[in-house]
Image (cartoon, rainbow, N blue to C red; front, side, top):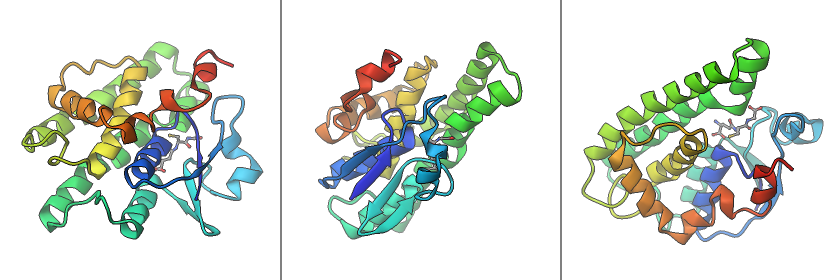
Length: 219
Ligand SMILES: N[C@@H](CCC(=O)N[C@@H](CS)C(=O)NCC(=O)O)C(=O)O
């Protein structure tokens, strides 16, 4: 399997976590989406994913895109450990939590959206940060309530990580990187700590990827 992703790419981070939880090895291909590089918009990458978004996963000559679809594919083809509960109600609740991140929060603060806010609409740095923090607070305040309803395990839904945790951790990482206030969400913080105690999550983190220090130093 070949994963097209980037170090600071939260949708790719989700897939790295899922691959690690499943114990699957993969070849890593970095697609640099930093402003000025924009490799996700280059013809070579658009031939892989016409949406110009990362991640993409190449499996036996087929290309899979959209991190949620990729993770569900991995869960279906490598069922152990499961990322979705068997019970249909619990399954729908885990998916709802994950989709609250993937469909409501993440798209609003995506790289392309942020670039359009500043370059296309002339928003200054302060207003852009306000937009970002607003979307984080709106999303996490409802996720905190959802998670508190299932506070009987270390993870978002029980004693083992599910799709909900796989989606939460990268989004939480983004909020920390953009210096958003995360103190109002103690249950989410506890879940993230439980995840970060696992090597599968730690090894998938941006700061565990080769080249992280150079990126943060702006090189
Ligand atoms: N819904 C997509 C989102 C993918 C996505 O937005 N990726 C971002 C990086 S986290 C990206 O490629 N941004 C580049 C751009 O917007 O130009 C998924 O889950 O795979």
